[in-house]
Image (cartoon, rainbow, N blue to C red; front, side):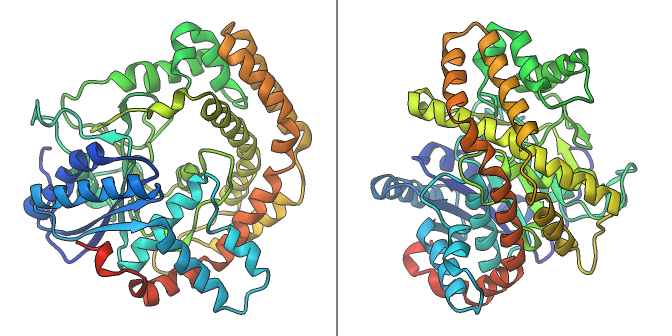
Length: 442
């Protein structure tokens, strides 16, 4: 990168890899980034794998972590069981005078899949380890061709240079203030698992993207699909390019970094959906909070369980539910944009206003709007003329009322979690290290 600015200052960073699967290859690949920060830049960075896999997989991941620590001379590495973070949350709730303790615990820990809960655990661990900078990598991403081609630079170098710095100090003229998010996209498998539809029926995939986007023409959507997916996921790195994120230059959460915002505002704990860990993207975009996109992509590989029929149906249930939740959150973004929620105090959002808006929005079930979204997506699936998606559409139609009747409660639950988040973060900072034993740290 030209004119890279290294500032060797006492900053504590967390490099977090949340996982529920065997991730030895990923750990080995990504450890190079941690080594780079320690030895090339000279900054303190703590690496942590937050692991919710079963005991046999957990032990194999631990072996990979110990091996990576030795091979890459990593200084501070943690392998944290999900249950450790869950215990911190449970004890916090039990020691407070909060009402509805059982319900509050359910917002912090569930045996069902919740992308928001998984991300919130990494935020709590950052608080435990006193880190204001969080660099997240998913367990299905890999460094791009480093062993064959060392000229492909590391994403974290851009993150270090921009994250937490002022726009004016990094020659970003379109925005002012502190940069709160820095990240890039993927190469290889798409983040949205509809790649086969796009290859076999491009028009149907564009129709899917178009659902709910009344502000875009079909031609505009086709350009977004071409730029972001068709070309973007096969883009070759030539030189560094820096942008303000947009629909074509979209930051993926498996290759991004955050500054401070996660200590003030949690993600939605909703289960049975995807996309909750992209909440900051839309919120910050609507508030004009600076974010930076770069073109140092990571390689993304879907796990084999995507081919399992149950996993496939569950995935599309989550996909459709996410599109219904967006109806509620679009109202939040509109309201906070119009009311002008500002950064106040020391880089914290007016989270009370966000909480109150979510409570108000959750009072009204958007029945017709959700039904319309579900019908349109099922129609797209049927019109694809692909048996797989025709079968999925029939499954989704049987689950329509489950989706419609659950989303408003998910919105309310997010507000309830926001309400207790500052106290939980403080508890994690003050008491969290008591829960980490020698066996969790290398």
